[in-house]
Length: 287
Ligand code: ATP
Image 1 (cartoon, helix red, strand yellow):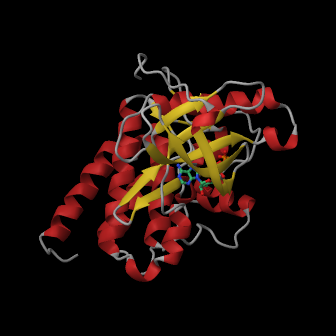
Image 2 (tube, rainbow, N blue to C red; image 1 turned 180 degrees about the horizontal axis):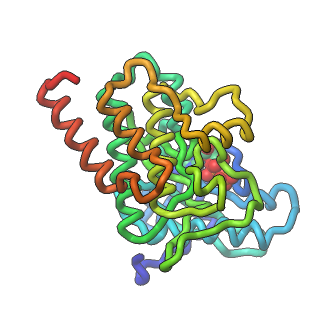
């Protein structure tokens, strides 16, 4: 990350305008940031949840700041950018980010279903694959990849968000305690069985996220209970091929969902494959 940059922002430079969403730890507002030169910029501001409910502020503050410090290190067109952090005063910290004007990808996919064709689905998938490939190059794993954690900046541009669970790998994979809510229906078999998370478990989760994109925002394993999903994944059962999903795309999903992590395709290969498909679409090559 850029260590020379000063990330501190005064809370007085931020005007909170509208509630955007409510997370486990943070509440997100749309707002305006006026910098020292008087320039105004639309932003998203994550405010410590405890600030409203007078719970244990320090634990939640740490979670919020950890996420901000993680975001600080990235510089990629398809990763939500950190703009700054407000830490003055005794109450909770604020995390100021670039605003994705069109909101959550899943909601957008449902709402704009009629206008989103296969080429847009593949475009979005490619942009997110390039973001994840960038993270993996830096030894970061995201661990919570799902359409609900992607944001839409413009109708042609999606961005990866929500770095609350992301970690930098040392040499070992990450094992988590089962504390907290886990995204069971997105998780790789080794994450379900051993709570083991690696770049290869990210690839598996990304496959589920692409499946959501190809399915217009339908959630995976709709109506199936978590424990049932675990048994079915264990038996090698896969999410079905979405209607109108070309065979080439479903074949890609299948190599992201190999039970054995070492047989799974890498994020870089996924990004290359999708880039190739986009070029073919540009040249009018039919599937
Ligand atoms: P958490 O992972 O912290 O429990 P969450 O997954 O629900 O929470 P948050 O990151 O807390 O998600 O964000 C809550 C909601 O705020 C998001 O679902 C999204 O709608 C909105 N949001 C968050 N960041 C932005 C942003 N940069 N631009 C636009 N909307 C955002």
